[in-house]
Length: 457
Image 1 (tube, rainbow, N blue to C red):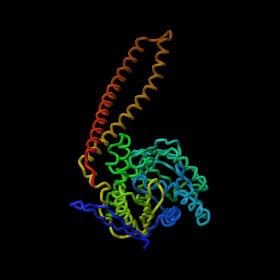
Image 2 (spheres, one colour; image 1 turned 180 degrees about the vertical axis):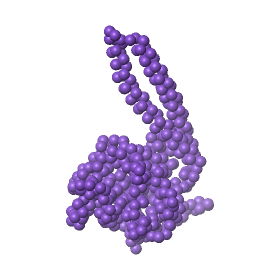
Image 3 (tube, helix red, strand yellow; image 1 turned 45 degrees about the horizontal axis):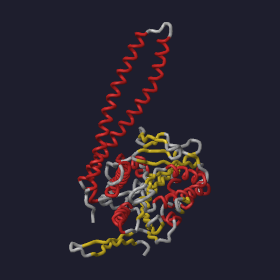
Image 4 (cartoon, rainbow, N blue to C red; image 1 turned 90 degrees about the horizontal axis):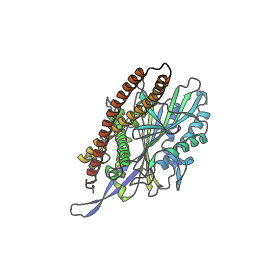
């Protein structure tokens, strides 16, 4: 009927008799495998473009299991390893923004600019500025600012496509057990409207290709970096759920600081004219059934996100894209429905594993390892900077003592003092390195325990 989605889940009774459990999900629209990105865009993100011309904040997510087609939908069709960015939602949205700015809203005197950045392991990197690491800070008005984020003025779709290609070339990706070329970061492309002259923000459209989520069981046997990436991805996606849960319950406290992703997107959720679209992608394979059900359950709850503010709406929209093996686009569903009821409690993405003590131990060990690593790297950078400064100071000291009127006593005293201070600093740094090494061992031991957790059937 154009709105019903059914998943047939293979199950087994206690006596090992096999049967199918049927799960029904209903959205506003459902599409078959012949649906194109243009059609999906028409029923989803296209409705958000008008919002930014009305001084609103619009956000479109692509969410789902790794390898299920998020980058295909947002960035465009793939032909082998080559991607056609003209067929992605980035380009389709940009075309509508330029058209409306020229034809419908020309009198508003607005300029269009774009930014493109990624969030990788809770760190922000500018994809339009050589992957420069950026800092995320909150100003006095409690508005989140990404310090140093580069904005490029754009006047056509071709300008936007060039920026997207530049960013995609250096975006972080890697190989996982589920996908040979998996996006390991959240990529956020923003189209920004500003008043010409004053440069005042008028509206913003954020198009987000989220990193693929995975179960702890899928990444526990990987190398440390992959485990780290997986834990950070899942942490940020669960934080996103918590924010939606809190919005649904109209909680006084909204946990946006739970991850860098939710912190950066805070204004997109709480603005009086905020609108949100979530495109959720699924895979039809038997081993993906658990992921598919989790994605559909989550999408069903997201579409129930209630209206926000007096006179404004925060619409939640869900598009489900079914992706066959090797990345071929198959199936889509979409929903656009502001409702009054509160969200039900969101179920954990990885129910049995997320509740296990082994996984909690692993996450705690990983968190401590990350904190120790940040501390070590910052301390090492500080020592290197002090070395550079010391070279200049010691060169001047050496030049003075070699002069005819040089004072060897002053030279010796100052040099001994500098060496003592340096030895204290290096001794402390050595102790921190040993602590960091212990954290590495603890994380490795916790991951080995996680491997022994029996799979959920």
